[in-house]
Length: 221
Image 1 (cartoon, helix red, strand yellow):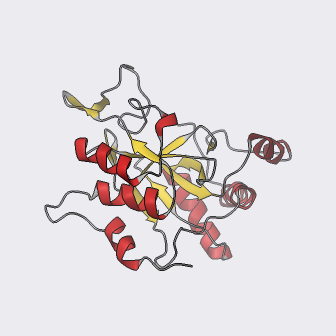
Image 2: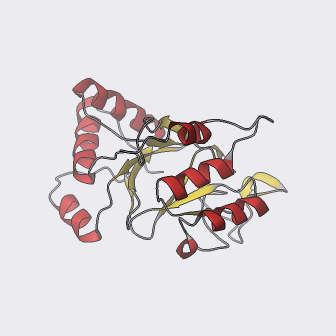
Image 3: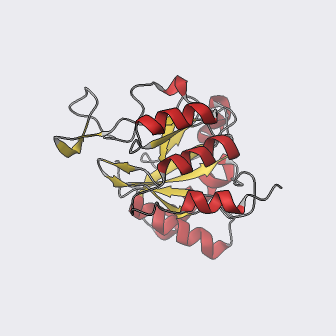
């Protein structure tokens, strides 16, 4: 696979002024990895814990698309440069599904226990995105039919598991949202043109099994 170590360092680095290199990261995602992205809505300047969108009860403040909407997500480098040239602090939103990764997310504490259990079993995971509230495990694209069959075959699936497929989105590092920073809990390994991600079946099976074996509850969030 094509080596892009220099560009990967750009993704994981920070600007000289101490701020996150959002445009560099967005260009890596879009141009190098072909992940469609778009700028997210900013936090409300009058109250950093609130969202600047019109919804006063927004549940993901500063971590979702608004203007433009999710359908505008692109891999075009020129558009990415224009967006972040005009909105340099905008969170980076990944439009999941299609040719881009999907994600399985769960609350942070159960996620930490689940990943530790998976490490002990030697299961291979790809990138994991973390916020203070939830962790998202990136997986291969899946269809709603595939997901439905997978969940139907399960005796138990924690209600707090969320699935970010076609038409969904997650915020990517190094975004800053109204709820805090977005970081890599498991960073993409250097050296490949696009990060490897596991299938959704393996992740759901392993996460449900790990949560069951460790006795960790996954509260609704």
